[in-house]
Image (cartoon, rainbow, N blue to C red; front, side, top):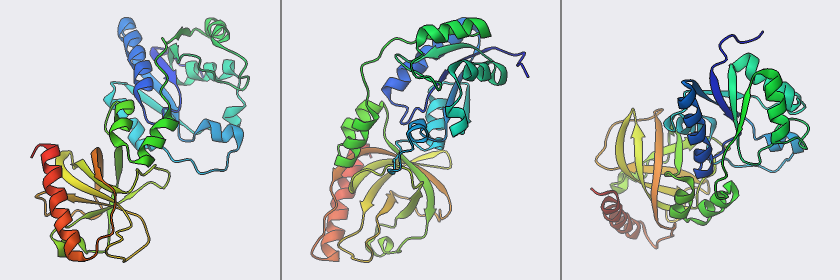
Length: 296
């Protein structure tokens, strides 16, 4: 069924990380939409298309979960987001048929193509082919200007190395972790630093172990906090990696609540101390340093 309301300016892509390269493309979509007095639309996918097409089996950690991606796209000013299942059947669609879908189902009348971006089953087709199909279908096809190369792979490497500040610079925002507060070991409160144990999506990339200065979003309010990622080697109570945040000057019960952490700075790696008392002294020093970083 043809959509009679073909009034959207769209772009398509996986947009993992919604990094500065993606943001450059999104700004152009918004500019075209503003010029034409139309709504902006991003069509993205739950699955990494490359994995479906190539049948890769290696585990692929994402910079953004679908929920985080939608949050960032909304923050960028995009009016509408459509998330599609990238199935083998979708992978076999031609560029022409996919553009037909965009026009008929989502009301796309203008499509902004990322620089050198290719889609559809026949990867040999390029921008000139898309323009030709667009003329047949009633979609104006525009090519975005090029942005200096931004590599999601490089961002992953930096995060895993613990170079948070360099990763944030390429992302254009503070790396995020979000999830539900679950039961932990209940040891933090005995040391004067009660923590919320965060359970994140299994596909989410977790940065290097260590202590981080973070901002914590809870029920729409911002709090300052100290994050530890690691296995708590001093306490030797588990080999399981945990994500635990101590929220400064906060004492509410938040089990089962959703938190979003924005990672500001990594202050040190995870260390095994000789005693619990030494660990408490270090945590006190960490808290003082992080409060200074966050501007308390």
